[in-house]
Image (cartoon, rainbow, N blue to C red; front, side, top):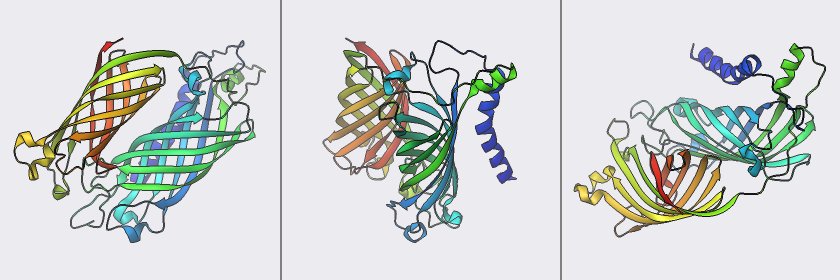
Length: 389
């Protein structure tokens, strides 16, 4: 029954958008534009590679590497006025991932739902288009650690985890409606210490696949017996120049999270975390910005070693870089603690995604690290920009 439900969901995920497009979209073809209609695509990839495992108990089970299959449904914006014009007209969409990462009786068979962006990185008009494709989502169907039934699994303490992947590759033009896809990818699965154990899995590998491109408006033209044939492939326009404005902002952000210590794995015991940030941001243009500021942290999981509440506070200073994509921004920050770092080591990082709700308020979701790149906690919260000049 579970398998039937899973595949029903898979079919629904990838064909429901097309049903909606076929029934509810209005026929709105701009005959003045070079790119007429609505450009869509479906792609399938196979993936294989090696684990970069940092845990202690799964080396033998992971030595044979991993495999995965992936399907994606994508939208290609085509209007010259679309926000994507300054980024080379990237496409975006949703995907479904099925991984074979090791012994399923220990690790399970992970499935993931994710969103993605495909950024072309060379000039238009080439038969081979190089691209960078980040994706992020939720993974499920893991087999978590259990003290008696599954003691070897030191990678996952939950049936669910965060899925993130970065593919660097190319699409090769086969014909007007088909591309060959190939590349290398990095994949990370982790629950960011929300549940322990939490070594997670890091994987590096190669991928190979096919993409089918079509024009969603062609079917509607056929229904009205129109002889017009629309192109299936979007022809990229030259990228627009960045909008430069050299502006300064003051950001105030507060975020919360919840974590579990390694000593509490397999239990429901949890601790709360807090981040407060005062940030100066300087934006060069609509894409690029640099930041610097102060951090105030509270980590209740330090209770085991620091029972006094005042000893669970930490302070630090950070600097970073923001890359904005329309209303989204990827934030990369590196920081250093003032004084006692409570065993976390002197340096930390924050990797976050920010969504602009209004011009003065945003939502942010991110991960703070300790001891290099190890996850300290996951946080989400609201930020404000009360001053700018």
